[in-house]
Length: 114
Image 1 (cartoon, helix red, strand yellow):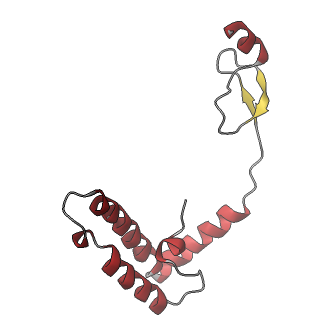
Image 2: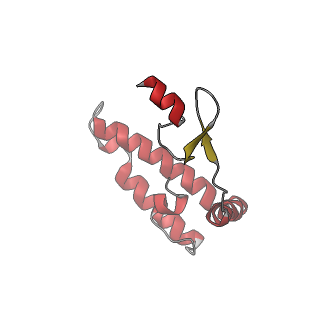
């Protein structure tokens, strides 16, 4: 997931003026009206411009930016404890830790399924 800073192409230390200039530059180059009507490029530009506007709304407001920076720091510092995965059929522990895998079955249920 991209941060608002990455969306605008500025560093976290960027001044409000630098953020404003980056926003204006991106809006001028990514505006959907610059692309042929109904084209894929126009729809992609529409999505991109929405991201740019959302990022600017947060970073141009001092209060919102302070809160956003705090959430970024919190997200970077949080260390979540790994939890074991449970079988989707019987509820027993599998030999896997929660990941984005689609395993979800213990050895017994996996053997019974084959």
